[in-house]
Length: 166
Image (tube, rainbow, N blue to C red):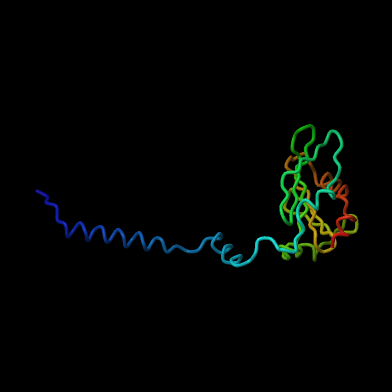
């Protein structure tokens, strides 16, 4: 007959606890590393423009297109471009003063649009840098919205007006 032995049970539980604590000492994840890099830094610079300031520089949409403003926050304005009610792209103006590293991509740019450096942002994004400060981006949300479509819509922004902010 097996009898309950409290000392053995305590020793067994202590061993399980030691294993659990050892397992918790795992390697840092990419999220931990990102947290360490940004710890103590402000998310948005106090020098960044309010997002609402950017709205007047967005293109004017005409039928069959509509522009629906999605987000305005300090340093950023975002709008969805819809064609016949269906989202086809996201349009963004971002003040890079909050993230100066964002302009690094443009230093090696070999293309320009309307006199501003142009880069691809992944497979579905096209962006340009206005006056070394404002990133204007069009990102396809529909596969039928091509790189040429993105460039066409980038030209529709009031880029010269935006350049005057700086």
